[in-house]
Amino acid sequence: MSDKKNGFSVTVRVWRQDGTGEPGRMKAYKVSDVSPDMSFLEMLDLLNEDLIKKGEKPVTVESDCREGICGCCGLVVNGDVHGPDEHSTVCQLHMRRFRDGDVITVEPWRVKSFPVLKDLVVDRSALERIMAAGGYISVNTGAAPDANAAPVNKDDAEEAMDAAACIGCGACVTACPNGAAMLFTGAKISQFALLPQGSPERQRRVLSMLEAMDREGFGNCSNEYECEAVCPKDVKVANIARMNREFLLANFFGKAEPQSAGSRD
Image (tube, rainbow, N blue to C red; front, side, top):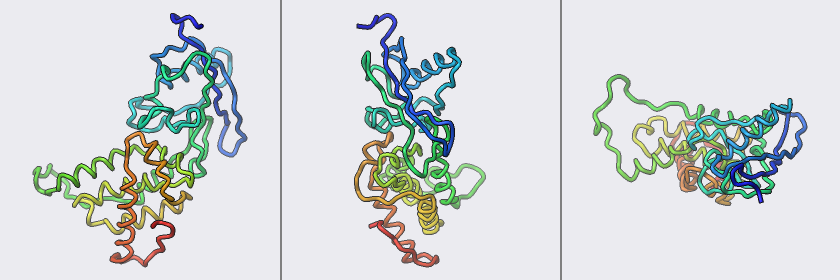
């Protein structure tokens, strides 16, 4: 057994790739003195400190808030998107979930639309371009409006907030067998479609965002529900259904030329 004072040891099999289009490979490293109170990212920090001391290149991994808010820490840990904990991000995963001698396999998001930049970091800017396609909402600027100036039904407000909780990490895309971004896109459409402030651009928004989603090469939903299962913010697939309704209504009432709904049924 390992010395509890000094923590325990694990073997980390991590994906190493020098850049987009470069060949990648799995490489194993032993990490010692791991405390069960460490976060998973702190364990990777420990690995990188050891690699730097040995004159080797550290493992490139992205993180920022380490509070489950920004979503950039997304990894696949032992085949689980964001790791074994439900509805959480990798930065919220702690080493108490592992045992002395465990072999931990760490990989980046494996999605065509998210090319690997280096090691465990992927380019998720496709999601940002979908959001940018949604454009703006028409609101008056200046002083803050009165609290009840635009009455919103309580249930609608709560659903809009639940949809807006999406942090754009891309876990839903990674878990989907089709590489679909429909939960992400549905959430971003829903957060405005449910509120009166989002009504003026409602039809244009859904058509533009779905066009951008298709242009980025994401797949379509086939009701696997894997996206909802791995979402760290528990965003519901009901948002996909709402997006489909918005899409059909925009095609029916919108000024744009009707588009094919494809497999969005």
